[in-house]
Image 1 (cartoon, rainbow, N blue to C red):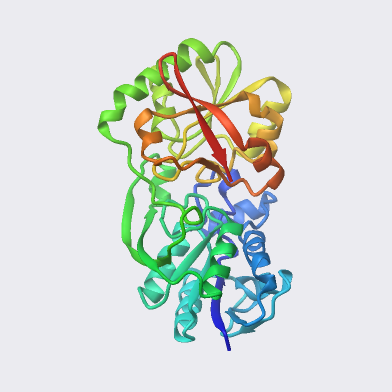
Image 2 (image 1 turned 120 degrees about the vertical axis):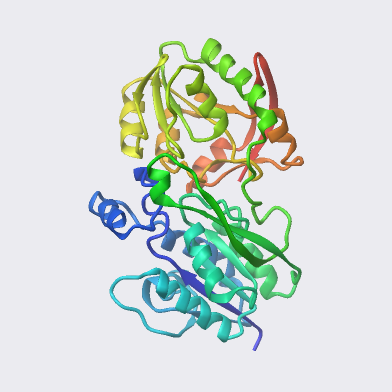
Length: 370
């Protein structure tokens, strides 16, 4: 027998992203999102990752029943050995039981599909017993244990299964209190470290905090946006401390990890969901202003799923404005800005080079990849 891989899927991870619900830890809010027609994100992203492994022959895939892995393996055309049992509703305890069982099975790599909350559950279940890799399927994903996108997770799992990647590093597991986040407070916490395989370009870094020294640069960027870019048009403002500086300059309050809408210098909508943004973008010309996640470089797909591929297609690539301080770009070490919307056509449309506002009347050209 060749390599043995484990798979655990949190089927409700990421379900509230497009509805501005900040996460999926609260079962009541998950039910609300489903009632509003939300689609389950994690299963499809797990299938995308597993599709890369379809060519493997000498590998055993061990997983949990139903929507926690069995269904996704079948959809990807893979034969899996199913262990454990599952009730009607999945919980964090199911994730922990499944992850612990995979470690007991001696898997060479445990793949899990979810977000930061799922990563915490995996950490509590396996510690450093086995290497793990996250298939990004949550809302925030600030932890450093996730691949840059689902297919990258599949490619790295393939390299591990083929014995071409064996080195692992300790990667931080971070999460925030979602209830506090909805109340406007970010309270990040380091829960510990998981062992993750090493391969440059396939695994994201941890989210970096904004340095206090960047504040003057952010204020200069904000002044440029207010003076040069707002006008009287509709503007969707994504999350981040750099974009928050724009609303601060206008005397407005920025939604934490939310997308706010400006019309000129006035607030037209706060913490808008995907449907609200789409309706507004269809009605009048719109601009999107975003800033990359510090240390990771993600423009879309991490904490701003409201700015979905549908919304971006309506807005148009030419109307997307990127803001970043020079130190934030320098911290990427030459790595490109990233997008992970789940839509390959949108990724292709966004890829290439874009202008980044780095100060008042200051811009640089930087690469976007996926």
